[in-house]
Image (cartoon, rainbow, N blue to C red; front, side, top):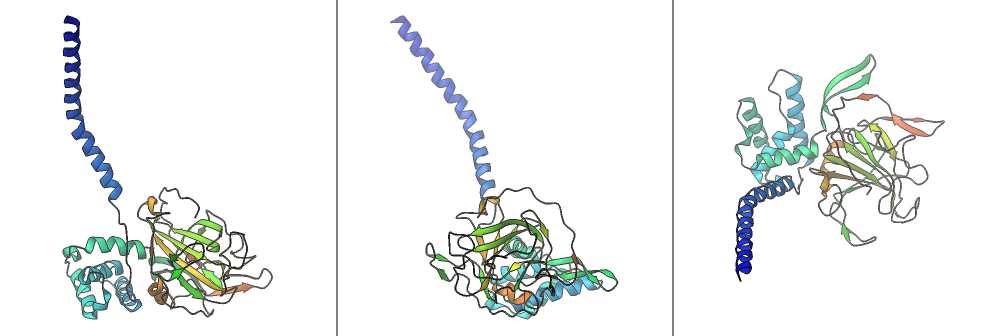
Length: 341
């Protein structure tokens, strides 16, 4: 009986001690788990981008003009973010006077972030458009000329005809029913495909849905440009490889109609066209899977139609290359890992 009582007392003391320790640890662990969960949640999960090309152009004009003189520099991303915050993202309410007001606010030193949702739109639109405007150098008759303005190019080379409409979200049924998360640009087989933005080739090869395709990641890691259904047999620009750095305006491949086949190099698409898609990546967990963010690029392509890359053909190799060399400062690359599509 005596031994049993002592054991029970020791057991009770042990339970009490563990309870006290857990009572001290649980709040600490709870804060750690909560912080980790918050950090995991602390990035944008979705972006709706429906800014009309005319509004993009108006903001771009103000941005470039302000950098040409001694005015207060304006950011087209900030101007667009202010308008989106004002309209709740609905640009059917756009008025040119609102753009002018935003520009005057910046010039007078006022803070555009006075609208509560401005920081969200600034980050979201900055991710979509971040590398499209800035300083660059373009080859001229007397060497490279330094410029500031639109650096992004249309996905279709200059002088090559194409047609398109806003088909983002349309139904697709090959393999399984799904939404079309890109933009189709109807063009003839062999039409040179252009890198919209400078970046690094992240994927190159066959995908049964996209056929021969190229995936290029922007230098800041936020944008993944996807070019699909490239030409059978000779889909890519000669020598293009995964890991290569390409400049905005470079020829990266040729329009075709490959895809819709598990077997490589099959023309499974009826009409030749370029599928161009733009994925936004705030966190690497969004690169593939249910968390992917693809934006409608129709209005962007309308804007870029006025900025196409001039190209020339080498009759011996039958390859197309850009006509004027282009240079852009390459920032340090973020560390990231990504799998194959």
